[in-house]
Amino acid sequence: SQELEQSPQSLIVQEGKNLTINCTSSKTLYGLYWYKQKYGEGLIFLMMLQKGGEEKSHEKITAKLDEKKQQSSLHITASQPSHAGTYLCGAANDYKLSFGAGTTVTVRA
Amino acid sequence: DSGVTQTPKHLITATGQRVTLRCSPRSGDLSVYWYQQSLDQGLQFLIQYYNGEERAKGNILERFSAQQFPDLHSELNLSSLELGDSALYFCASSVGRNEQFFGPGTRLTVL
Image (tube, rainbow over all chains, first blue to last red):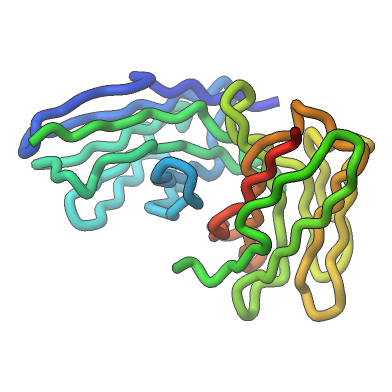
């Protein structure tokens, strides 16, 4: 089965600073999804990457899938309190998604 | 709001009991997925239905079963409940193999 490792497990960032979250797969990624989750709530879809080298941005969040398609990074520029939450990467495997354990982001004012 | 609805929002029951969780997918989505999220196991895929047919199975216990009805809503049945079944249960829907949109979840507490 495909395993996803996220790092760091958690991080605290000062408001206005940048942050990066990594997601490393044990197998080639054919579809990589990034979701955000507030505690106890549903997952919010952020972005999907499929091609090696692909990069997508939405507002201040940018995600990349590396050329070898085994790692993805999520970068947040000039973090805001609204960016706080847990970010999960998910890998498409046939019809199901396998998820990493998540990275919890705290934004300090 | 993802467009996926789940009921109930919270459920408290006792060990040995049976419960049914309900999910209505986004309009037009034929695929429904069920996930279980717990502190120790993280987010785990349980089962997927596509247009009424079971498409994929994950780490779903034999005590759990699901179905998707002709109107595309889905139900997840959990029986002989144990303390360890306490978790957040999410339903997601998608169009084919595209991104999945998650519902708000049902928080199940087994006492």
